[in-house]
Length: 264
Image 1 (cartoon, rainbow, N blue to C red):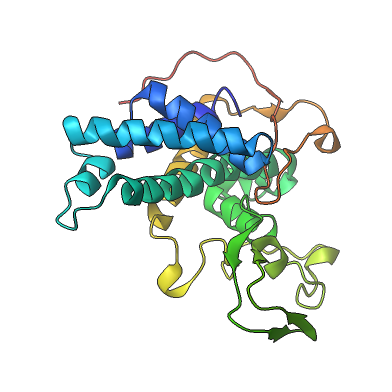
Image 2 (cartoon, one colour):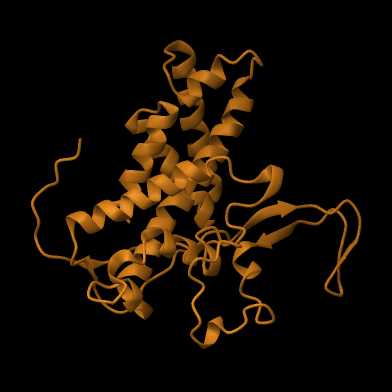
């Protein structure tokens, strides 16, 4: 988490928004505190200070990046409006992507279907692993808070007006009434009916970019370290606190020494 997915995903996002590394580190730390709900108030202060600094920088020194384009858009967005967009950008892009990488990697190094030597080989592709994780155990487990305008009946339960309702993306496909035979061993490989990217007009606009980033990160890791294995047992892994994400504190692995890769 600290040595691979954190710096990789942060670097991708920083490049997209034109964010210097030092500001990006503060953004990531503030965002993590908010998701963990540990010192979330201080995390929000840190996050806003860092993003406002980035916005001021891009107003003074614009470049070819997301922040500069918003700062110079004909809509004349003010700093608070740009801040809200960037907060959503990092919130959705940073935590979700790095946790999708590691959660899918955990599946691939512990599930025999993805092992070398299996009749399917590693050709049970990274995309298959990503979609299985997104279907069964998405990195953004609960989100999409909504406030009913009036009382709403859902499955014989009244949801009161003006009270927050948190939608569980994980629960969507884990209701025993709809899982069929998957709990008895039937695979959900190839099933993309999950709602991890949402749907309709509110579907994630960065789905293709996220798939590309996450798939490349995992494939590159296997190219460099083909014998990577989990160090310890799955039930020894520690998961971070917080109501929204499905995130490990660490993913300890072992692998044979390998020379650095030259990537152009």
